[in-house]
Length: 295
Ligand code: GUN
Image 1 (cartoon, rainbow, N blue to C red):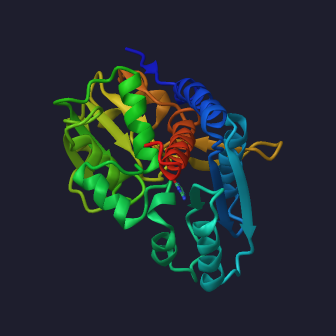
Image 2 (cartoon, protein in one colour; image 1 turned 60 degrees about the horizontal axis):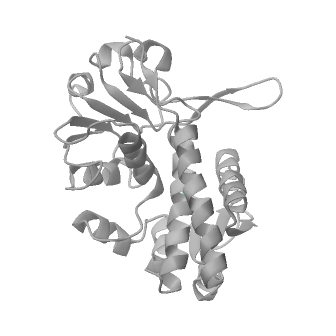
Image 3 (tube, rainbow, N blue to C red; image 1 turned 45 degrees about the vertical axis):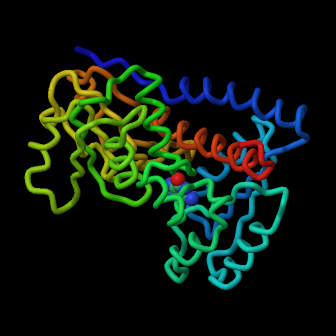
């Protein structure tokens, strides 16, 4: 069997078309323009390219977007003051502070300072708590994107054995939580594996849906998966540079060998990445609608 490729690029395009119409309608009917600010501290090349992609997508959808780039030496106090400035700004509905932050800045202090109603990343404890309870909130963008990819690609999650590798706050923990909830893309039996898991391969081989979010290039190999598995590869690992200076990317899954056993698989790039950005746009539009009391 050779796997069907789940194109995040295509699914993201479909959702972006829907959002474009919604954004145009907000302006026409209500005079509302959703606004997003991205804040990047330092010069991490991967973060620079993610933030640039987020701003480019926002512009393309008619979302107002501001990009703030700060020196790596910026103090926590100065960053908190900037967050507070945008908390007060009525034209900004979503605030995104790109992670990771430099070591001298306490990430939690910064994330907790963002107004939960502008927390389009879904990282504030208020939103995390609501997510766990299954209440209406901003869902974190990568897990939300994965759910949309699965649902829109017709992958059955109800009753499925889902195995997730990686327990990060950004991906592993929230996707585990969402997939066990009684919701679209949920109702699965979930196993969350991590660095202390005994016999990771044995867990992976049970999976109907395998989600890899570890940051280790090509860690999941063909001998670790069963025939017919659906694979979601969240990893974006830079494994080299082309002569033209472009990053060569690899996922956490050994795509070439695993695709011969899987029923469907997301590529890297062009899988989860475009979905993450698209769900950020969706959250920004939701934030603008909430601020205008339209929802
Ligand atoms: N760094 C890696 N992924 C993310 C994300 O989804 N949001 C933010 N703010 N930083 C990230």
